[in-house]
Amino acid sequence: MEVCGVDSEGKEFSSAQEMWREEIGEEGDETKKTQWYRDGVSYWEGVEASVDGVLGGYGHVNDADIIGSEVFLKTLMQERLVNGGTNQHLVALDCGSGIGRITKNLLIRYFNEVDLLEPVGQFLDAARENLASTGSETHKATNFFCVPLQEFTPAAGRYDVIWVQWCIGHLTDDDFVSFFNRAKGCLKPGGFFVVKENLAKKGFVLDKEDHSITRSDPYFKQLFRRCGLHLYLTKDQKGLPQELFAVKMYALTVDTPPKVHKTRSKTRGNRPQIIK
Image (cartoon, rainbow, N blue to C red; front, side, top):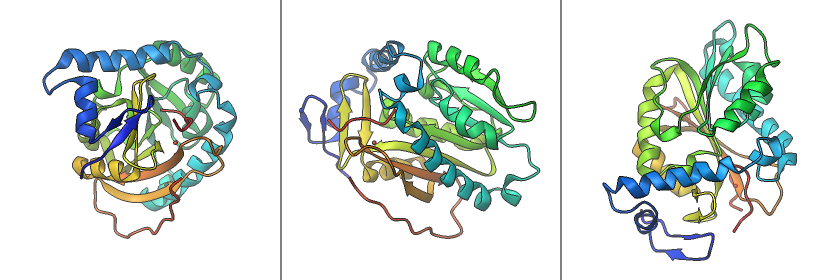
């Protein structure tokens, strides 16, 4: 499937391949690809380590985001985990964790251990501080990995849930697929991925400032198929300002879902982001 798109300066691309060639060079050109990732991290290193900072000046959407995520997570836990996860030692991985916003407000309440993965050192330091007085002996942040997503290999069979929110847009298509292929073996039986991301109305939108790509729903589904993942459940995030990209939640499994969920989706977005 050919996916056309634009960048934040209005330049049009006839395909994603054309865009990636321009941004990261031809296959095997590791120098330009390394620079793509370095520039992305550099952008975030210049952002304040606060809720408002990591949400691009939209800190007020935090509550709506967490509420939407919690409803989605509870449904998945009840359906996917034995006894809804009750009386089990549950472990989650928070990818692109930033300052620990999602771990603190959501994951640590449902999981006995949460590992945080974040490439920006100042964000991870803030996460340690923010989570120092959060949780308990039985619900705690355990590991803080200062590693880029494209270089990280999770521990085999450790996680019930791998949560990926507002960060996968920094990965190239090939690294997107490679990450999930590595991570599939890191889920426990019944475990699942949650991907929560901005959605382009069609094709993709390349952000030249923070070096990320906002993909459309068909683009995401194309990549999920390449990963060999099954779409278990989807849900649109509600309650965000109209000027932002739409945001969608995807639950993905390694095994084939036993039933098909009917979902409603309205097409109308690494943080909620203004449509460019």
